[in-house]
Length: 211
Image (cartoon, rainbow, N blue to C red):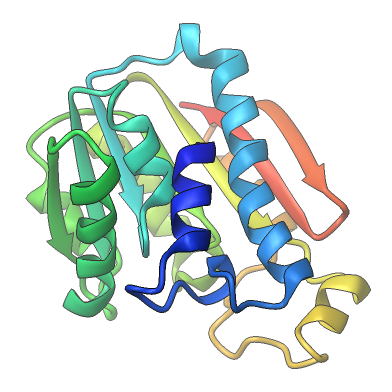
């Protein structure tokens, strides 16, 4: 993971947003450390996670799925539009294992991608995306259709507490449809087992769930 971080911070070939060298230090530190904490969770439990297929939903740059691509036989990258998907493709071309398929999803129908998946998924990545999904209950239920037996979900969610709101200048993001505790409740409803939960300075919760 470190070689990706170092390469991104030295690069000027793309606007890397909060991950890039021009970002405010604290935000840049937080965004990378979400992924580092997710990697610790993955590494701790990796012996129980299948390595056939990985799916990165809302991949954006896809740093973590590119890093994991050398451990998995195949990777799906899912994004809402071609621009964002191309960012993930570029990172995978540069740092990944050339074993991916990019799929453009539908904004109005978040489960659109499911019918494009031909392989069963061992590990789903949901980094700061589930809070944006309308009808999250239906979305979570439909994941079973493409899940391998004993599939895992690695999830990052913002807490939206006072400190988080301070970092966003108290501007609540308009497209946040779900709070982290609502998503926890829905995952519990659909009988996903929480394996472990970590918190990054009370700003982000990182979870590993098992189906």
